[in-house]
Image 1: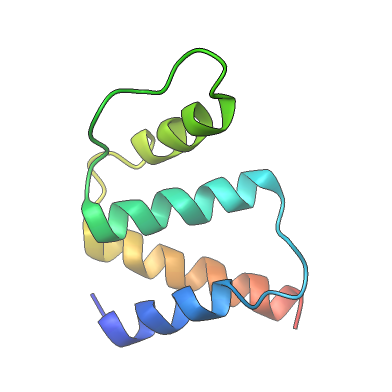
Image 2 (image 1 turned 120 degrees about the vertical axis):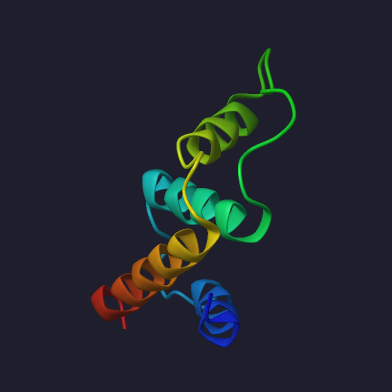
Length: 86
């Protein structure tokens, strides 16, 4: 993983001029978590914690993806978002 490029992408993701859609936010979240922590752990939130469940499900969808690959995909997604909304 290119730690410096990943860290720069994390900083850039917080400076986007427009808030991405919920789907894109979930994609960013899941790739970030997969890149930094690996496969999802713990129990899926239930009840009325719809946001927590959606985040868990998005991260679980990345299961098995190599952390370096997740890092690169995160960097590419952030760069794409910046190029669309400079």
